Image (cartoon, rainbow over all chains, first blue to last red; front, side, top):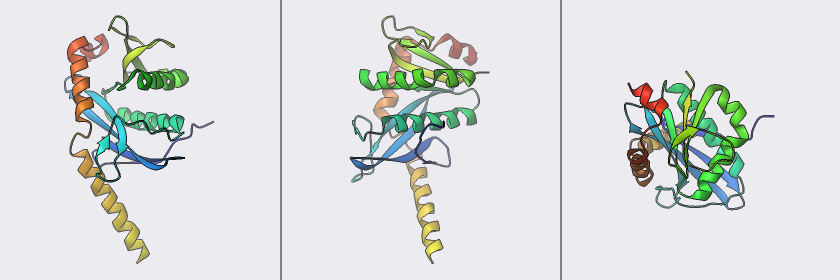
Length: 150
Length: 51
């Protein structure tokens, strides 16, 4: 079965994307951006947030609760997959702005780890020792790095 | 006429996306990520690929 995702559109530079979340709170435009944070390591930070309909600015500290979390995670996962596949040797850093957001990312990775691990390497920043390690299911991480396997 | 409208709307949407892509829309997140890497360093796998 194919995971349910939203359609998304990207900029010509293929590092900024938008899609619309549909749910009880209405239609909410979500923005995803990859920003280079270490040029030598080709490490990009993944930013995700809601577009403020009034100002057009991105809000990255809001909890929308539009009852479509899984579909959003699937969509962001697909955007990240396309981004990594198009940029050779790049890696993506995913850092939630709260424990609950990191937990959500961990659940998303856990759920799809078998599929992800075939093509990609997932590393987590272990919460207790602040050390990077190969992603282990049901471990708490502060951040994640995903790269394509060479 | 309708086709022109759709085409224009798609062009506007693309140009809007390109405009947003031209700046960092997640400045505080980017700074936080840089700070985190500065504090804990890169994983070995990325350090090796840097060399």
